[in-house]
Image 1: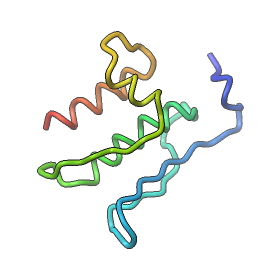
Image 2: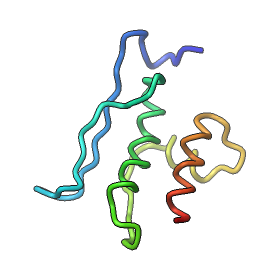
Image 3: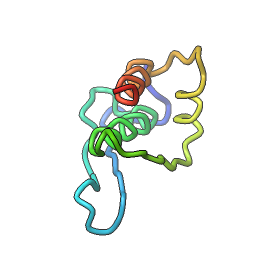
Image 4: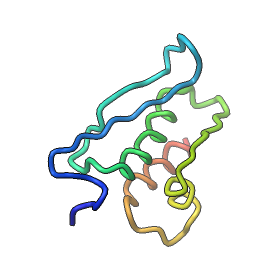
Length: 92
């Protein structure tokens, strides 16, 4: 199945911004065969969680209804591997 919002030759990227000159800031290519915007939106949450210390509280600001619904809906099926990965990181 092809995401209607992507093309066969597209590549996705992610970015995380904490503050000016913060070593945790990221700008990366999406390392996945699924180069869709929805996949990237969930993956960026994973990367934000990975680069911060596990003992810190983290507030993630997003304008993505997809990310919010993916995380909050119990029966969500799209990209469930990424949602499960987010849950594992949060529970550490």
